[in-house]
Length: 211
Image (cartoon, rainbow, N blue to C red; front, side):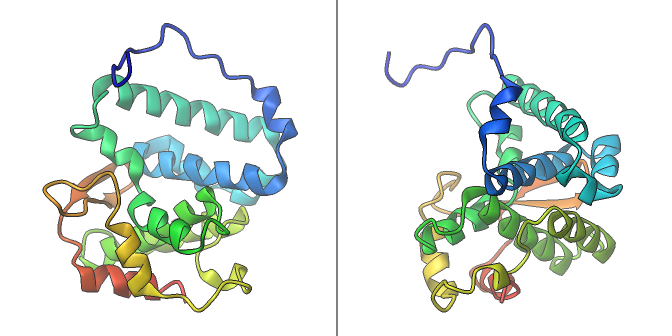
């Protein structure tokens, strides 16, 4: 039935399929793994910060991180299948990211946009006094080390960045509640939460940090 939800009995993930992907798509997948590490925290996040460049050349290491990310998503989705609360945390970086991705007319790939969105969300969290600069710099270093963008310098062929246009495109985000955008912010790894405290001005200021 269209619109009905039913949890699957089994999900099969063939890791051999990863070998068919171009390098840029593999990097995009790492953005979602790093996002999962921020949400889970603990040993998962700590492992990501240890020699992050190794993730670009050690398939067994990446698979270990991927398994951790899958377990996190399963745990969260089983707990909150209709995205009423905790499941929204899986959208860390996506509120900014979806706007950036749409503005670029999808020249910026989804994983790259999520990386840029996480950079904005981390900086917004720091700006609001929620987390310290060490977390921001450590995470940006992980993203940069695996070849993911933390600013727009990797996209020289794009038109002049239009933060007003990005903001408008962010308004179509499916996570809006009561007509207001919901941002996922962070206090520390493992302590992400839904926030309504990101104003239009703060969001635009964070987008400008990508220049």
